Image 1: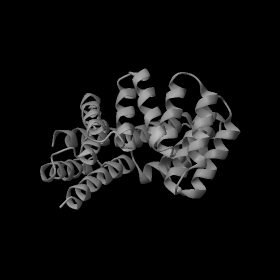
Image 2 (image 1 turned 120 degrees about the horizontal axis):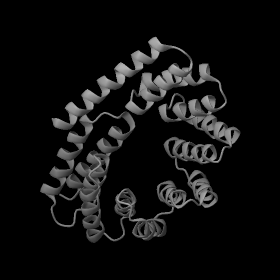
Image 3 (image 1 turned 180 degrees about the vertical axis):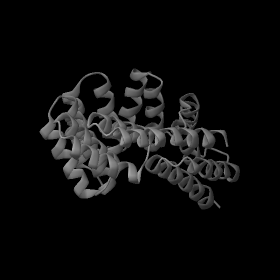
Length: 257
């Protein structure tokens, strides 16, 4: 009897993760259905479903709701590292950094993995302590449990290197990440930033075209438009701009449905 609500909660969380990876908002409705069903079946102290609903609210940028669900999840299970992760994320987005630091420390105490080290790294980055941020993200890489976690850590280590002007270091991290996850859109986009900073617009455009072919987010398309404009390709830039407008309309329609 207990297995079914937790299966539903895991299914809901999986849909949240798929939506984040694919930028397909249709998964949000599927996530909500599964998570609410889990709560209906097992309404008492269902930390897994509450955590999932918090993650879903955060993905929808409703950070007040994310915080509310995360606090309920922590109250239901004070040993849930996942609940503290959602709590950390909500507090960060709401600008409540001291509370977020306490939450991520609790997450680290419960489960020192890539997720907790990565969140701690981000908090130090927000506070301007890039050396400590790099150290913690390196810890996230060291304990990465699979290709996805390795890619996550390499991406952020590259971003931290790029932020300090270390283009060679950034490029090396992105290259390593792409070895584990060839064609990863975020890594391709990041590598394009390095190419642009080096003045290699053809390489930047090639990576951005590959990234937008897989994941045509507004951010990626705008970067492609900027690179094409800088290269003097007005027709290509106009086509990218039109895709931005289409993506905006689709996102608005999905939010309204």
